[in-house]
Each structure stands twice: as structure tokens, then as C-alpha cells.
Length: 419
Ligand code: EPZ
Image (cartoon, rainbow, N blue to C red; front, top):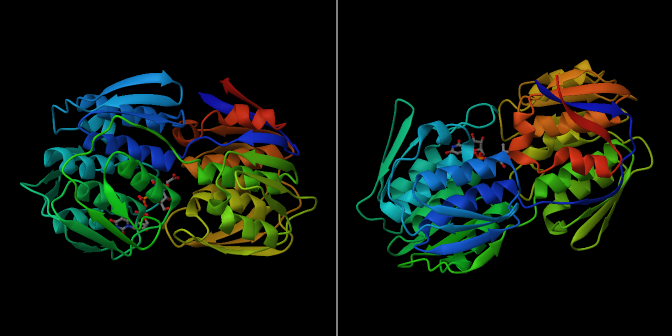
């Protein structure tokens, strides 16, 4: 079994380069299905979720050429089936984007119910509401989703809940629909804007992405023939920012969009860390034990749920008692059981957890339960005294490019070993 073996404690110091955003990449790749032609996408993170997205596109008939480890050319001229392989689509959450894209391109699709991290209930009712508003019929039976539309027509879609996936899926389905679609109560995450920018570069007419009302004027065709670079990963940047604070270190985090990091910056300052915003890089350092804080996860521009476990490591080490309220997912405190093995004092009750700060953590054998939990456990291992073994590496490999090399470069004693 593979594991990450980490020997700590380490004060992280130096520079780290942020990769392209996973959650933008896994939406932009399906979006290429809407293009009757070729496009090049660069700054893709080299992670297993991107490889899986590419395999699904290939199974549908797209031709993919890897130009280098972060750049591909996709030729979607010959999309020759509407059935996406179930053994691929059930492996991760973002396979739901195949539905919006294929409805737009072919007017039909069959996929499995999406898999992905176990964070509690993950319904797709708002996705279906969007497709149906545009004229599609959607059935969910025996773990399969079938969607069909003779013709997609623009309409108003009011999202009952702010959903990243449902917003992007409504945009994908609306791009080639006849007439105008208005998505109200849309999510505003940086990856929503990135997908809209990608589609607009390819000839779509989407306005308002990044606000809570998005207008999509249907166009006849997406032309392709151009290239697009994926936005830097907000969550990867935030992970390193919080690692700097947890280790009382000093990191220059390069190739990020600091505007996307404001809620994290605010909380770092609140716990006594320091942040210097350089526009396309951010300098984060801490010279003493963090102070306690109260966090509530919220849709963007609030504090991201995808950084909640990493913040949990900081608060485990903070002076006094801190509280995290998780408002997006029902079951995102599984990592706290693992931190407790390392000496943290955490009482998680449902969607709220109380952190009574301890002055140090100790190495232990810990098991990742999901992607961001893995990142948190790695940070905990780096700051803990002694040896930590982090297992279940398939989670971290889904979403962080070269994680151990990036941490090694800033001083961590971390290696991947096969037991
Ligand atoms: C995206 O998931 C991200 N995944 C998640 O990141 C992230 O945690 C989440 O957004 C919130 O920011 C991808 O982008 C691939 P939602 P998504 O729809 O789109 C409820 C990671 O670690 N809801 O915004 O699936 C839902 O239950 C992953 O990178 C409905 O009720 O999340 C949740 O409570 C984990 N009905 C809330 O909305 C729906 O139809 C927000 O979910 C859809 C969602």
C-alpha cells in the first residue's frame, strides 16, 4: 500500500508555484464537447481527475493530444456516441458536466450517477431543474441518468440553492440553446467565471458570470480553433497559505489570483498571521502560535468549504477554543477523527466542530477520507512531532499536482513509499 511518510516538525519556507484549478479544469474539459472543432487548453493540473475527464471525452469520440504535461489539444469534431462509459463517470463528481455539454452538443446523453468525495448527501435536483427548464427530459433510474431534448430553448432558471455544479451545467446546456437563458441565484466561484471565459473565447455569449445573475444568449456554433489557459487554483493556493500559518513559516505563493483569496487572507490575519498581496503572488508568514477564530463556510466570496479541513489544522494548534460551522456539506468533519489520533482536541457534532487548541501535534498513522481531508492531514504531518503516515493517496492524487514535491521544495521531509 502506498503512503506518504512525513517527518516533522518543519517550518515551511520558500516559494511555491500554484497549478491550474482542478474544479475549473474538470468543467472546461467537458465543455470542449460543445465545440465542433479543435481547441488547446493549457495550465491543466496534472492530476487523476483531469486524466479521467480526458478518458471520458475520448470514449465519446474526441481526439486528445498531450502537447506537454499540462497542455492538451482536443478535437471534438466526431462525437460519435451519447453513452458515456459508466465505469468512468461513476468515479467522480464532475462527470455530471457531461450531461450539460452533451445535451447541448447531441441533445441526448446517458451517464451514471456521479461518484466523488463522500461529504454527505450530494443531490442533483438543481442540475435537473436547469435542464428541464431548457426543454430536456431527464430520468434517473437504477443509478443511470438519461437526458434528452429534441431542442433546447432559453428560459429563466432560478436556483433554489447556490450550486457550483448546477450553475455550470445550466451554462453548458444553454450555450447552444435557442434564445436567452437567465440563471438567477447563480454560484460565483472563480471556476464559474473561468468556464464562462473559456466558452466565450470559443464563441459563446455569456455575461454576468461571477455575479448571481448569468445571462446566456444562445449561439449557433462554437468555433474552436483557439487556445485557453486554466485559472490558477484558489484552493491549492489557500492550502499553502494555511500551511504557512500552521507551520509558523514563511511562503511566497506564486501564480495565484489574490482577489480569489480574500476570505482566507481575512481569517489568516484574524488568527495573527501576516499576508502581503503582490497581485499575482501572495506572501504569507506567521511568527507565533495562531489565535482562536470562528469560521463559517459559505459559497464564494465566503470562506470555502474546500479549505475547511486545512483551516481545522490551524485551529487545532491555536490558542483557546475555535469553532467551525460547515454550511455546505453534511459530513465534512471526518478528518477530525484522524487529527484526534495526532493529539488534537476536537469535538465535532454534525455540521459544527469545536477545536480546543493544543500546543503541538504528534505523528500518527492517518487515513484520508476525501481530497481536502488528505491535504489537511499532510499539513498536520508536516507540523507534527515525529513520523506521520498518510494513507489512501488516491484522494490527494485526484486534486493536487505534485503535492509531495511542492512541499519538499519548501522544506518538508515527505516521501511516497510503498509498504
Ligand atoms: C463543487 O461541488 C466542488 N466540486 C466541490 O469541491 C465544492 O466543495 C463545492 O462545489 C462547493 O464549493 C467541483 O467543482 C467538481 P454544489 P458541487 O453543487 O458542484 C447542494 C473538492 O474538494 N445541492 O455547489 O457538487 C449540495 O448538497 C470538491 O474539490 C443540492 O441540494 O457542489 C451542497 O449542500 C468537494 N442540489 C450545496 O448544494 C443540487 O442539485 C452546494 O453544492 C446541487 C447541490
